[in-house]
Length: 117
Image (cartoon, rainbow, N blue to C red; front, side, top):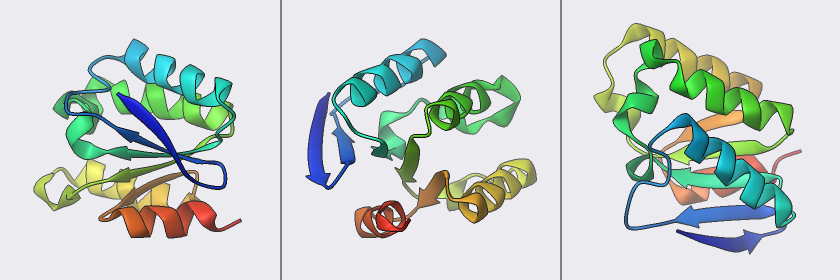
């Protein structure tokens, strides 16, 4: 895993493997990024276990609540049209509307949303 500072206070997490495979991984990531002084994070769908996107596991809720508690904004970049669950679609819609957690389809969209106040 590599944390790249790509813009003012935005960390991009890149890896050739899963970065988050369990709740503790998400919490560790927040701690590492927070310690390095970032309060905005770009994370890629392919680096997150598929269980995260199944809301019945409660993994997303627990990890994303920690992002909120630390006032850390997150943009998850991926293709979310593959997820057919209506509850997941509603979750994405509400998250994007609030702006703390964002589901976007490109790095440029992530940079845009995280650069807005």
